[in-house]
Every structure is written in C-alpha cells, then in structure tokens.
Image (tube, rainbow, N blue to C red; front, side, top):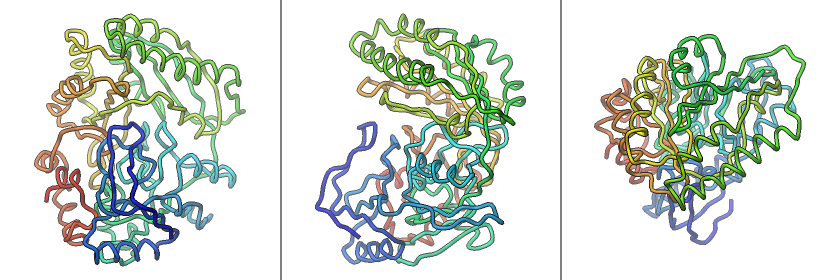
Length: 436
C-alpha cells in the first residue's frame, strides 16, 4: 500500500475538488481494512474515488482519499455459475477487454466506459434496455470493508440486506473491494441510427421501447430534430464501421467539430440555435454490427456537466414536451443534445429504477458555460413528475425528498445507521441526500 503526501483532486468535469489529508492506494482488501482502522484512530473520514466521472461531490473528502489503481484485475471466473469476480478499481473499458479475451460479455452497460467498476455501480450508472438497465443489476456478489475494518461478503443469499443496499450504495456503507458480475458468452449487436423528428419519436415512444432491446434518442434543443439509436442482438456476421466512417462520425463530427461548436457557442451564445440546426443534421443514418461493448460505448472527449432524472416511464413524453417548450420559449441557449433512455423496474433500494419502469432525461451543458438556470428549470419539471436524480449527476434534492420517491429509502438509512454509525464514510453530499 502506498501513501502519498496531500494533494488536490479534481473530477473529470473540473467542477468538484478536494484537498484530502492523505491519499492512499491499497492493493488488497486487507490493506483497505488497515487504512480504515487507522483513519478511525486518527478521527478521519474515508472516501474511495474512482475515475472522477461523477459530477456531484459524492467522492469529496478532507480526510483519507482511497485511490483505485491498486485494486484491479479479474480474480476468479466461474464458468458453471456464469460469473466473473473482479477487483473494484478496474476500469469498465479494461473489464470489457478482459471479458472479451475470455469470450464473455456484460449484458448491458452505459455509453461511457472510463469509470471504475465500484464508482459506476455505486452511483447507479445505467445503459438503456427493454429488459436490462443498471450495471449494478448485473452484480451477483460483493466484498466490502465496513467502518470497523471488517471484510464482509454479501449476495442475495448472504447478508442479503447489505446486498440490497450496497449495489447502489453511494460509498456510504463501506469501501467495495471486489464485485462478482453475471456474464454471458460474447455477442454481437446490430446498431441502427437515424434522424427522426421529435413528434414522431414521442408518438412512437412505446413502440420503439417495446420493439427494440436497446433504444435511446437524442433531441437537439432549438430544433425538432432527433437522432434515434436502436441496438438489437444479431447472429452475425460482424460488419463493423469502417475505420474511415468511425473517424468521421465518432471522432471528427461527434467530438472534434462538436467540441469546436461548443466553444463557439460559449463565446457567442446567440449563435447556438443556428449551430444546433446545422449539427443536428450532420450525422446521417448508419447501420453496423459489432461486438456488444463496441456498440454500447462511444468516445466522449468534449467535457460537460450533466443532470439526469429518472421518471415513471409513462411520464416521459409529457415531461420532454415541457422541456422542449422551456427551451423554445425561454432565453436559455443549449448546445448539448438532451438524451433519453429507458430501464426496467428493479429491486435495488437506491436504484433510480427501484420499483418502477423508468425513462431517463439527461441534460448537459458545455464545461464552463453557466448551467444553473437551465438545470434549475428542468429540475422543476422532473420533480413535478416524481423524478429521481442520478446520484452522480448534478441536482439539488435532499433526504426529505428522497424519502418520498424511494420506497426503500428508510430501510437504506437504517442499514447505514447500523454499519456506519459514526459516518466514517460520510461527507457533505451524503449528509444532504441521506440525512445526518
């Protein structure tokens, strides 16, 4: 285990920072246990940080900051059970490669792959899916270091209450050191992407959600244009994008040109609606078939801040029309598309899809651009529909609100009181969203 001198830390977006007392890089659960015990002796709080891809201050601490780089790699493969156990600091993109080398794959994932596994699951990162949503829902077992330094394991059959809470635990119950995921044989996805008008997408929303394994769309503010993505399993053969098409669409247009457009919009906000009309028509229809994780994920090089809310699925169309009206009738100039995804109901206590089929509306603003007024107005719409904010994305909700919209919120906070009564893993963000 290595311990470094105090240093400042910033997240990926640059909107959160910390100056911890100590920065520690453990290489085993035993070393995590030791550092937690030492922190307790010194009266310090402990927070594990992953790739820093959360926009909230969920990982910020002035105590001991635990870095993930020493906890990486696959620990066990159980072919009969269809599971793989992996160290919690492993990056999702590396895990995908490790699985592919063994002919295996995750069933679903989000569209960004730079996160650590513990960070992504602990904040409820999700993809879009008719029958599968959150990455945390694919967890079958966990190894966690609790506030007293005890190393425990949990699953649906062992410490089941801890398992129900810790899969989306916000880092509030302990430090996750290993995760066991359900996996399956590698598979191909056929991707079909095409422009579509907003009215058509919303009128066909139920059909598109039902008829496709993975459906999402992006609406371009200041226009009525959308880009619709449908991913479904394919028997093959693989027909990946050509290198030239990938570089043109995903690197040049979606990152290079889009990033330049955002910078122009930041300097001259009045130009944003014109830029939006042009950029919304820049990507043409395309279809390709490739390894699942190469279809699920895409490079994101333009930095931004984000807010995302999960709504009851039946509220999606009316809520998005309200956001559309907000942008059209207001003074906000929004350069980033609004992303819409879906997920089925699940049983994880703090999952944003807990107990209800959900649709997600995510709004973004280019890093350094004032976002507060836009996000506040959108949040008002989302909360009117009983929305639940993504734990790792910007919002202003507190424990009183969450007690109303999460059916198992009281069970989670009671569990936290038992396993971390002294709030060894607490910080200001957790005090706000979970209570004292």
